[in-house]
Image (cartoon, rainbow, N blue to C red):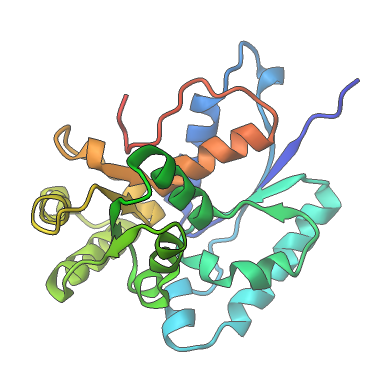
Length: 244
């Protein structure tokens, strides 16, 4: 009997995004019965220290100590790959990968690679993410690595992006239309070919039809790659946010 691949999901960053990731893996896996779905070990580690704060305050040790224990659980559980549905945490990717022999899917690299393949190597890419992700330059760096241009929002729009993210985390009303206007400015004024939804909370938003084609959902990229590495068939290759 062929051994089934097992996926480890390091979640809790935040919990709603982890739940959405789980749902998307199920929805996008070609399966006609329970046994054809992917075996997953999901750690909803909600008490992991805030990633943005760890970066801005240059205090990474508490975060890394927390995830190290999670990797040890994954090793005991025998998972084959690890998915981390949190963009900001990938600032610590190399340090996290050094902690375990299990391959951690690089959400940032996979997203940039997808954009290059689908929008071209001369693409101009807008980046909508947390202050931590923006300040580290992880998406800007990987765009430049693929010879693409990167564009971040102006100060006022970045504040609105952060408000959108943290309002969602706090279960407060989210002004989705305001966020959509930021996407429109990035596309029409800044001339971006596409915009990365570079925070998993942004992946949870229900966006209007007219902005969806411009939005590349990094979480969906991670979902697709997780399914492929688990040696399952993709039911549908949906990467542009919420686009059926």
